[in-house]
Image (cartoon, rainbow, N blue to C red; front, side, top):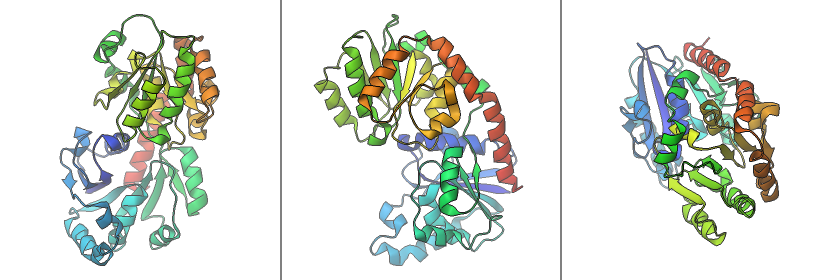
Amino acid sequence: MSILNIMWAGGSAFASVQKVHHQILSQADSRVLINTWLLQGKATGDRALLDQAVEWNLSSAKLKGRNLWKLLAPLIRARFKKALPKDLEVVLLDGIGVARVLLPVLKSLPKVRVVLLFHGVTRLRHSDRQLFEPFSDAQLTFAAVSKTLAQSLECDLRRPVTVLRSAYDPVAFRAAMLPREQARSRLGLSLESAPVLGAVGRLVDGKGFACLLDAFAALSAHRPDACLVILGEGPERQALEARVERLGLSGSVFLPGHLQEAATLYRAFDWIAIPSLEEGLGLILQEAVMAGTPVLTSELAVFREQLDAAGLYAPANDVGAWTRLMERAFSLSPEATVEEQAQALAPEQAWKDFAETTRRLFSGR
């Protein structure tokens, strides 16, 4: 038996997707051969997942069949079919983009089960529904990384969607955490008691970091000792750096870029801010709470799903509300807050549920 994991691309921009796929594949039987394909980009990122990856190096135009490439789509599909591993039983597809490319190949293989995993809000086309029609529920399983996302997709698909809420082994995750002093030293932060707010994610509009900077500027007027560190890289870096300069925050806001070991550094922070405009799940929330750092989040259903009344929320993209939320947080006990959030998140039970659901997906039961 073999499992084929097909992802759109590797690299830091897809780090959260790689984490989810790695956690899923870690539940496969140790005797099962696992292969990974990257349709675009290089195999950088999660080494455990990508060391043996096949890099197809296909452009978006080729994959999406744009212009003249539409005529060559049958040839590309033939290449994919020829390259499929022997004894293939399960294919894990990374989102709708990968599904559009590979489902036409896989529909001719009725004995191969396909799991299509949705990581975030997805806008389905009429042609997507037509793409799914040849597949029975037994052959094609839809899964989503949160209950909120699964419910939304079920309305569009009119087919069942398995909730595969991504989770980590909490014991292993906590064991990898750096102590507070070591984490702060790694980030070049002072070991003094001044409050440090952290944020982690790609530097893109959807993560809400522009709003966070504006809110932090307002907070800094009466909390000049506070510090903000945003870990991540992306196309909005220059715009965010310019905003930091314009707001006069150069001495209190830092953007170190993408750090491979970012998930070990949460204890450097007193609080983690997640000001996203939308999320499929928000792995940062889970990571921070398991590390012992409380979170402030946007008022999104997917965050309520995980923290319920233990969460501290502000409307997305509302500068005033985010300023007030940070002021409130800095008056609370981080230790007491994260204890409540950890009870709501219940990471041990979440990991057990995740592992059981994943094994059912692989077995087809």
